[in-house]
Image 1 (spheres, rainbow, N blue to C red):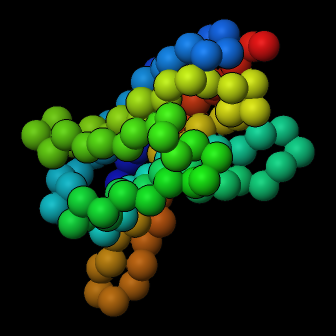
Image 2 (cartoon, helix red, strand yellow):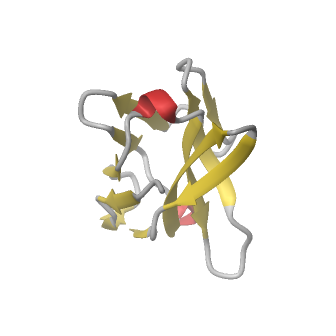
Length: 119
């Protein structure tokens, strides 16, 4: 079982920055892909940014150039640096990880952290 715990959410004015962090209970060595998703009220959960075990990153078009995903293998943490925040970035942000074990893919989610951007 993999446990993910997010931190770093909060309220910020438009144009400001926040840094989210996700603590992972296992070594990144056994994880295939990690990422951040978000869900705004009345909307579906969407991918924000992802990073593979090989270091390849992927970003939603709406956050490219503003958000940066990174990992710290020594600390087993994954961060999302969010700059130039906009009101439309307001959502609950979820940490995600998946791994393959015995040929089966397992998905894991954190409990979510609220990000609110005021105009």
